[in-house]
Amino acid sequence: MKQVLLSIVLVLFSISCNGIDDVYKNTVVNYLQTEKGMKTDFKIEFQKFELSNITVADSTRILLEQYQAEKQKKIESAQQSISHWESSIEKHQKKGSSLVAKALVGSSQKELENAKTKLEQAEQWEPDYIHQYANRNSTEIIAKKVDTYFSFQNPQLAQPVRQELGAIFILSPDGTKCHKIIKLK
Image (cartoon, rainbow, N blue to C red):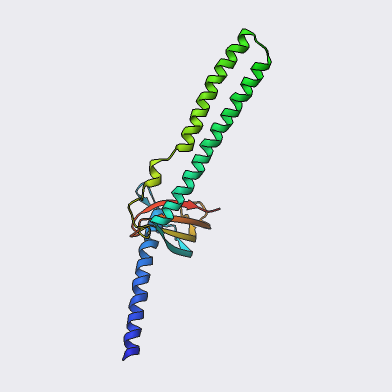
């Protein structure tokens, strides 16, 4: 009796898991086959369909990496500007005490001060998006990631040929909406 009950539970579990995957597969297929309200059957066949969660912690890590890269870029740009204006001042000072040289040195010093101010601002810069998930549970699922490899056939071509593509899809947590596709090379 226990084996029969266990078998029934396993069958029901596998059916429910397949049903969940079907929701995600249908969303991906509909996304790929629908353009401007028009649906085309591309006869999509999945060779790979790996579903994973994107949590608040994952998103926070991605945003933090993006922030650090942007901040570093701003700092480097300001440092290059400072170096440029310092060398400009040095070059004009070597030209002597002509009126033009003094005017160029004065102008370059103002630009140098602006560049130093920009460096200070870049070092203190912190965008709003970095705190986007501040009050949320780090394990909360905010999206689903579907890593796929599939073949398709475009019936609109003169001679339909089966093609293959790898892509990652970012879906809503319930799997009903596709937010983004990242095509792999």
